[in-house]
Length: 190
Image (cartoon, rainbow, N blue to C red; front, top):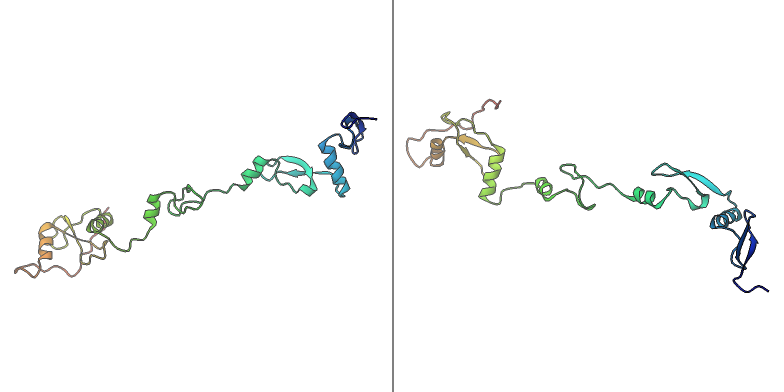
């Protein structure tokens, strides 16, 4: 008798070739023959050629496996999602949960309901009206931004220093010049 584990010659149960293996271990010469025999036992016709969904390479596999990709590398590539774009500038964000690419874009996108400080008020007025226009009262070069209503930062009336001083002290001294009811409409800067 043969001892357990002693190799001896067998015939493959699928392709019929001779191979050596221990008794009671396997009936097939390779894993491929074993898989093909199992496929045949399930009623399938063997391997089927399929095109990879990422690299478009043709590969063979059994129909029951339902593989869509030729390798794990292609499977990982297909699972990877593109990073969302920043809502303000359109660049990709750093983390998938982010809506903006940077703190700057996040701050720029926030609404500006009002100013929290006089410095913020002054900076917004400067950004809204960067170029001076002639004085709205006398026509001299405008130097000072005058606001009728401090809640409306962008509504600026350009005045020279003298007229601005008169505007703020209007009614306190006699002999003040009356200002127009609204700032004059000036031609746009070219």
